[in-house]
Image 1 (tube, rainbow, N blue to C red):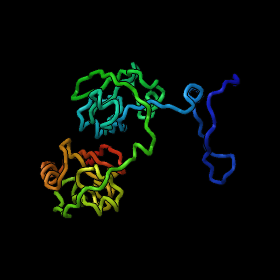
Image 2 (cartoon, one colour):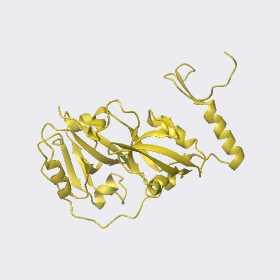
Image 3 (cartoon, helix red, strand yellow):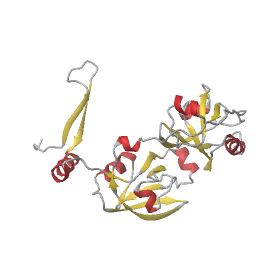
Image 4 (cartoon, rainbow, N blue to C red):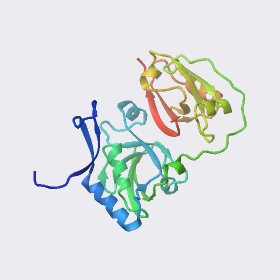
Length: 262
């Protein structure tokens, strides 16, 4: 009403193709950052920490032994070539503050990092094993999507092997050792290790948790999984009525998934 510019319209959701519907816009503060970047460098430069992040659900909070009502976002993966890896940030860390600002959501942290000047040290406060610590991360320029998605040559083929399902929350999963055929069929990167989910029975706890065919299980309750034998041993420790937290790789992205007993 004051005539101030608050956003730049970018898209609209409409059932009919008309002007009615839900509109989307870029906040004017971000638009100004883009203009400044274009004027200074001739391209849009966004800050990058080199981590994958996800929201903290109550089940994940319980698994990571986080204080009740703790805000922040969970780091599900750290790029080995990124600035966070060099600074000592680890998978499983919970980011609770960035440059003195409390972190409430994934989108907030993503925007704060993107708007940080490349080459500047950012103070990232994380919660690790119940203790807070502050890590200085030198923010880098975000690589192109093509660079981030770059794949390695396929590894030698290994024999296919399956195992008997366990008697716990993961009973509805069918997993298999990774081989060339499966990796090609499911578009799994050659660098990925673990066991792959080949089917998820309907109506089970695994389906309710969102696990999918093609997900590669890399951790079970924070134990690293590289072979079927390691998976079977880790799963065998889970009681029938016990929560299980899996680290899975889905189409190149890592995320933690909590599977709750009924």
